[in-house]
Image (cartoon, rainbow, N blue to C red; front, side):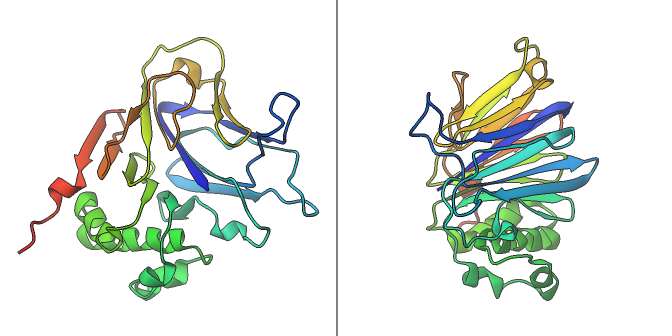
Length: 258
């Protein structure tokens, strides 16, 4: 099982990711077995990933602090068998794009649709990475995100999936058959440190800057006691660089059958 978290803020901010093992207060909460985080240095995407296996057992603790960025994508995998590779973990990057996904996808159904340049850009064996390149290939052809996504999603119309996508300036989120939520934090919010806990994994996401900055958060779970709104099923959530929120019904934009 995997979970997604995305954040876009009004100015570059710090973000710290901390994963801990079972504690006396939470003895039944297991640490995330793997995580990945994507962010931007200027216009260039950066990615860090880690699988938590040490001598056949989960690591007790892991902490990571990327550079300051206006946008972050975080992905958690709750269970891994030990045979996974970091190259197969989300997020993935291609040129100035970042992508993170959860849900089932048939890798072979898409890999044969990719042009040679995209096949050569694959780094692992993940169906998520292939689907990401399928979206990138469609964007390159149409130059318009909504028609590109309509083309990309047509062949997975029966699949339950959700994903986060960014070009470094905009944040996009989509869910079909799975829950996805968003929260608008408008300046000023609160004093002190921004801290949220991710359920099902003993993970903490924190920032010393974000407590007093505006930001839009997207997650597969409602995090904390703040007001979270569901992304309507089959809708694309688009967040502009100015943090305006736009909801697009992809089904409504689909061409009518002839």
